[in-house]
Length: 344
Length: 147
Image (tube, rainbow over all chains, first blue to last red; front, top):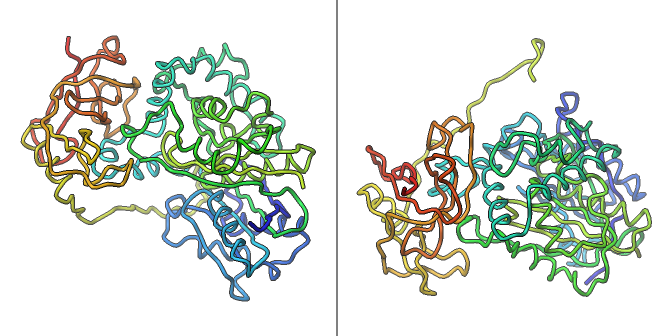
């Protein structure tokens, strides 16, 4: 494999309702920052790849408009995934393995605040048997939470503790909007249920934002030590909701077991039971988990996974030897990507 | 939130096409319309409910062996909803659940009618069919707990 490094990162704060910038402006801001950090010009980049959703933007082929944010001319080798930007980074990593280009710019953008994201996610379910019933994403997350409680794998207090952890760390992170609500576990447990055993705070705060990452073969910056993804059936009835099978497989394929101890992990858990389950199956007892506050306090749809990679890379830049980034898509951790980052 | 000064363009997105159900899902839904529950046997010998043309777990086509299942079953996991959303299967507070029908190896997602105190993992439930049925998953209006 050609060694791929994270040469530059561009981030802007995740905000609740950005009415001042359109998607092109969001992309322009993060792409410029990532290129500047990498010391590159956009004309130096061999491959561009983005992650976003037409459903969030409300129009087809929306990514062809957002590409204005990196400039249309000269013509570019460009691709897009209707997925979280973490998968755009995966595609770029594969593209760099081809050997004919040495740099890639990956970006993702989304406006989740105020967008009908719940309805979008429900519409993505099985079109014959599940979507017509209209279960909310939170209801599906709650079915997984109940299965984990029944299996003795978590308690409601565990859920409140991961929410409190996310809020405490997120409160001081510049990319996270102001925390709205209590930081105390007992106060969290006093909140009413929305979908038992889940409360409103067990769901991620949906935000607007963007992230960009410049990849380069060789050079400096955190090295991608392993990256892999795995998907399970979308039908909840065909999965063991307590096993996180595709998380385990993606981690194994990315080389987690051989990698040595993980210092920092950034997890894409948009519901608190997922945060507990991920900690269990990835074995993160000795790691600092979600120093950014994680997805629960700032979830920009189609950006959150790429942001986890950006935050893990920042941790390596800041002295961590090895960091793990996780990205997810689909209900109840259906599709998972693991990216291991190492100091050079 | 829209301010008075914002320009707002209303846009309604709809999927204005019929979707073909095919021979396997079509048969399952036709049986539902007739008030019956059927599963299909997979290549590995399990009974898949609801029926599909392939088993998503191994990608292999399912067989043409159909098996009557239900109408009773068991809750394998659940969540109680105090404030149902517009368009939910039931207007009153209800549970979403995975229900494994008797004779099936896989549970299916659907609504279960209260009372809340009766909802539990392992609780026994029975299918409740809609009076007016048109060949869709909502021909099964919900499950009810067997007292």
